[in-house]
Image (cartoon, rainbow, N blue to C red; front, side, top):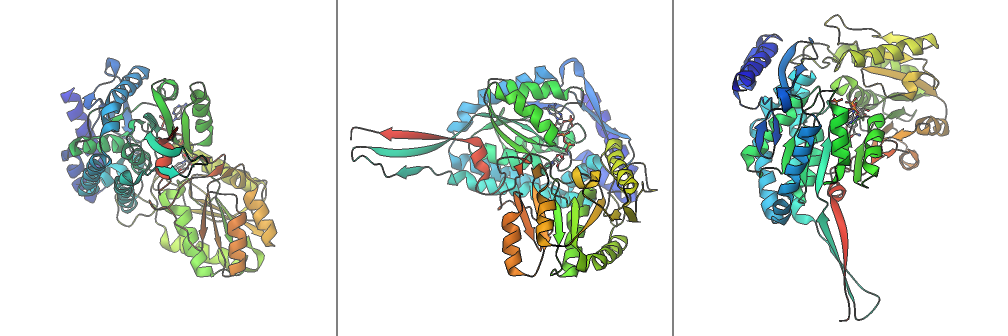
Length: 514
Ligand code: NAP
């Protein structure tokens, strides 16, 4: 196994080196840091999958194999759940200060290793290094936040209606939590869930996405170094072919009390169906279709800057990316002109390891095809390509930042999440029309609008059917604020003081006959 690990690390180093000269220095650091792990982490031990099964982790920029990782199946999933269950009594019994201190150590180690962790993200996800670095700080911020929240899980003493009774409300950890995370924020989506669950005394089993297991395994290595006890935090990577069986165990095993998932709405529904037989608590962060509305009253330059930030971060692959630009007719042409100029001036496609790059590759060929399909559907129905529109010459998974005008609500790009660098612009006339279009979706995660009319700001903020609203702001995520959606965008909230609620049970204790 040691030989396998060593050769995996060499391959990762070689894969990274191929990016560019600066990447080779990065690769050497990552390869030598001990954060590249290829086994599963179960019960505090690094273990192979049964039959030493492996799957490749690829560089999305080139398709080259970076490293091979243990391909866990249902057997490892059950083992991990058992390990989490065995460690639950002692972790639950630890004081909140003890848990808080361990989370703080984990946070400190993440910050100490931020450069290597960022390089790992760029290697397996492709996002530009600067964005990967921001993700690590964002990921760490949840561990820090929940290390603080750990000590504030207060219950209540409620005035009783009978004089001889007292009512006490306790908050207690729910138990073992299964966590399934996506590839687009391989570190932050993990810590936003695990930070909260561990803080309140739950133990967890994490299944990262097939495309990006290295970040989760590196976080497990650091959790181990921080002294988080064996079995409290487990990570089981799996290939896409093993994922459904692993997911089924994680969502049906009677030892699991709650599931926490971030990913597509379609997968979320499968997991909810699995979880219903054993009535598990479910926290779901699912897909979106964010409207980005620019009213005539908007500050145009501010709106363009916000549009660029909201649409093109992570090459358009975030669940809160603006998906539909609704622009009022009076400002429409000026907005399109300025937006195209800003895109051509500020966005640069290339390797994530190049300092100048703002747009890395899409995660895989399927993702590129989805963008192509939406563009050809829109064009066939009358949309115009104002800039971009095709794969970028840098490589097969790279796509030109694209703006479509003349978009209408019947087009695919206005109806389904793009998850790519495509900005479709629809023209509207009245505020009511914009709200109607924005709310005509069965999902509702984020929504943005730009206006300087304060009465309109109140009206629109209240009427948008989403969980997160950006008013004259294109970047919203922060650990202090609740993150989550309405309709089919999910259940529950992550981050903020509400994030711990997903992992707590409320117990009413009645003191009678006093
Ligand atoms: P996905 O296909 O649903 O995958 C997400 C995770 O679920 C991956 O770990 C995947 O594993 C796993 N998975 C897939 N099928 C499964 C099954 N049958 N049983 C158990 N696990 C299963 O989503 P994605 O395409 O990777 O991610 C993009 C989606 O996530 C978008 O819709 C985006 O909006 C959403 N998202 C939402 C948020 C939020 O906070 N609301 C944040 C980020 C992303 P494999 O990789 O092995 O298939």
